[in-house]
Length: 371
Image (cartoon, rainbow, N blue to C red; front, side, top):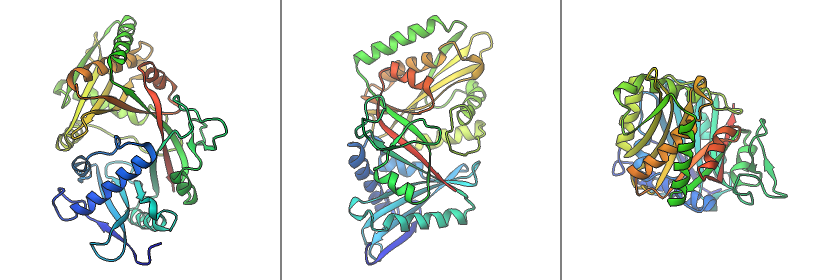
């Protein structure tokens, strides 16, 4: 451990040029370095401007920043950092933490001190559950997300998915009393003519068995006519996908919350492409899927939620909206070269759709929890 380790709480700067902006840039660099070390690329780390806009407070959440310095004073180098998210509308007993330590300073107690300080702040805020997330490469695992022969792994209580037992984040979580609550498979597909042809075929196959439904695509804000139905569908994202060993309260959405989220996304430079399925007889929205692209990283798209209301399942609507949204993304965002998606290891149905679209496993995400 540094002889003069100091830990500071930092205000979230309003802009990159505001006080604290240099420290924020140093924090972002730590996360970029960690991503390159573990995954070999920075695709999953947002630009400084996007991340800073994302961390600004709202009625639904606020963030705390902590840094560890190898010395005293504002000019001492930042060697570790933690981002703590505090929900403000639901899950008021929980907090999420994202913690990073520079490789040269690991296993010297820096992360332990930083986690202790973050825990202290969370307890002060009345948070009794601390959740943390870590993305790991497949190491010697294969392209469908199965561990290689002889690979030492850990699995959550559900038995679905795995993480490498020897990974630094795994060792850190275990020694600090976290339980592996759930594992998600991260997958990627490259956008090219062959994958576009696959999406076209899957869409046609789904159309043939989804009679009585049509689709609508938009980019940007949700149209006024769709707001009420859209809120009801995205609320189900908290209750329908398997939660594994994680505990959380479902969120409640209305027009005010939706428009607040959209305003924040606009300030972040986020573009969304949404395709929904409507029941022709009623005009009601019954399924949706969303892809997003962030400013400054236009070559990469990310899959957000996909959901079909239970009473409308069995008509391949999930396949229909996802395949069509891939086609619309290529038309509306032609700079996109690759798409990432995450699925709970328990979610076999959605994994099958993604595999049919050409996605292959490229990482796993561990969700750790501690009371």
